[in-house]
Image 1 (tube, rainbow, N blue to C red):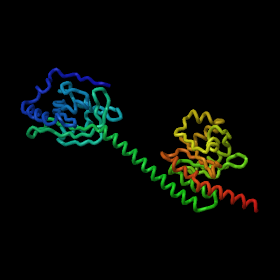
Image 2: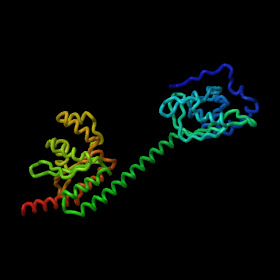
Image 3: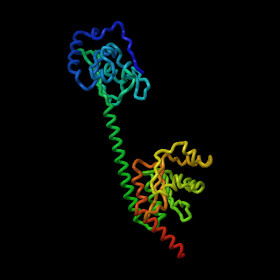
Image 4: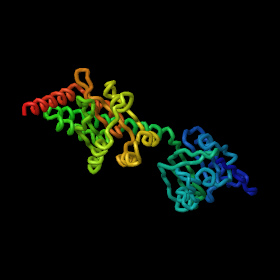
Length: 340
């Protein structure tokens, strides 16, 4: 909300300032007018006595409109969350009341149009002899810095996710090479995926009759593993070749759902109990990855809440090594059962 000051009739800009102080302000004006930082000065009551051009630009106020006005009431009256900042809690008051230099790295000022912008500032007392006659405020618009900081955080998060994916790939490859027992091997890989790149990971294998057999389940909450197994048993996936699991198996292509809206959950639920189970498992996003060998898809990996970039890491589960291990070990198991 834009604020228009009501000017006291007994104040007339710099005319209220003593001649010696006016000379001092003239010097300050000449020095600061071309600085990139905003600079302002106030008297003991917090009324503005000077504002440089950079401050005018940042605040959207011309100096003449603010001279004699309480600067706190116009540009520093609210916190970053929009709640009021009472004048008695304003850190700038300490510069005048206590004679202390105040340095604040994370605050906001309010523009003339009511919008806020992040600032860091220094507020120091102004002395005339031994008496404090006011304070000078120097502030910097931190918008670009905050934007750069967010970009740095984004890059750091991307690098952290990449390191997690590499660690997952390394351990998954080592696991795949360590055993011929496919149920043990795939279960280990599923557990490696949780919680590094997903909250929940399940692996299903396509049987000869077209049904899916759950061979591995991992969840970030161990108490929910049994719930997930019961869920799969009570509500088996419908063999619809145009969507979901069977579509991934038919096409051999990964399917990613970055967000699962509530209306979709309601749509796929077959009854109220099914709906309650889906919600309790807590699926927010899903990635379905096919398991392929020699051009043929024979299963899929299902991960819920995949982390950024998880698709490339989960591709391990459809790599030639994974497929060979699962296919070879399944063949071994079938041969052993046949001989028995």
